[in-house]
Length: 47
Image (cartoon, rainbow, N blue to C red; front, top):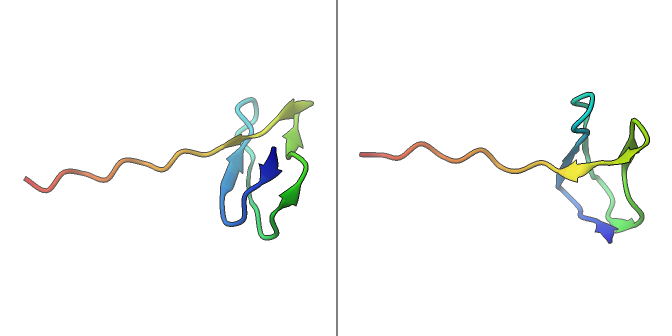
């Protein structure tokens, strides 16, 4: 799996976030675990 340019990655154990500024092969690791892509917050509905 490659790192995706412009995506934020988060460590689920300690909460560290990183922003990928250069895409490429490899994975981000923190606390000896692979970091996951941070999901976007849902936008509030405009009723």
